[in-house]
Image (tube, rainbow, N blue to C red; front, side, top):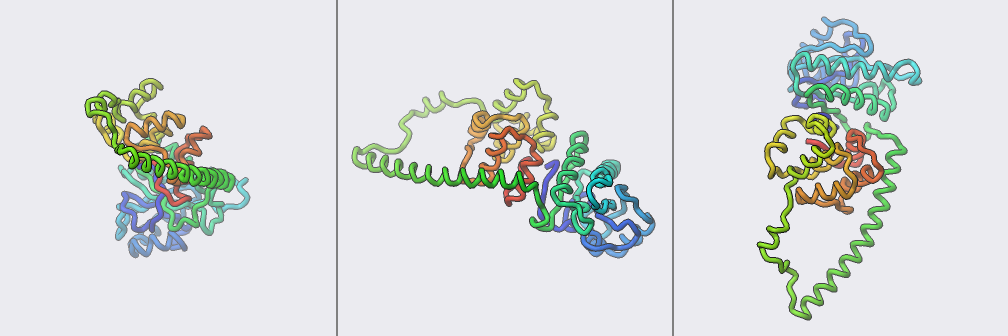
Length: 327
């Protein structure tokens, strides 16, 4: 997945490079800095001392030593003051410079902590928005899998207004779903009683030949018909869907491709399909919207409101403990 938010210990990430939110001086600081140095071993500090002081927003690379990662990229985030001292630009530079170093060293994957969101005082929602914007701008032009690593969900915060809007929508839908389910259960029991009374079975009476006549195009065929109708290029779609090029190529080559439900949703978001169009695409893959599924309700909220930014959707899904979109 080009950009994925994960809950993990960054020192245990199996990626080509991990990013260290470093102390500006050549010493071991606290938090992520200390954890990475402890896991990498004393050689990392020797390499860090050869770099010397690091200016805010700059980045330097060293070997990973005892880490699973081949490299450690050291960058210094800004100390948050009032948001009017260029903090966002300096924070974005941390990500941009780190990503460029990773690309220069032919890395295919990189893991970031949430830079400046700890003792440096940057509000979490600003740190997240700045990070995702900088990362997305870079990976729109480069093939690189990027992970934003959170040690715990408590450190991850989306905007309160978005959180409450989505939560209210979830609450409303769940109430409606509960009432609808009671109604459906009542109808089902009535049909079962009628079937028992009149000797009818609940099986589909259509012949196999009739069923085959009603078969429609596959998911892959339907997907590429939509892409062609919208006049989009492949890279425009898979980048916006948070899907890597290799996975998208598999979908294109195999007309009988069976996607995961999250992949269908990601492509629907990339193509800005409405609810009816998304339902149709889901059906081609054997899925359907379910108001008993929190992630389905969240995605429905965004589609219904015409909000098609997959990074924002994934942030809400992560906040709610649901799987994110893409592959």
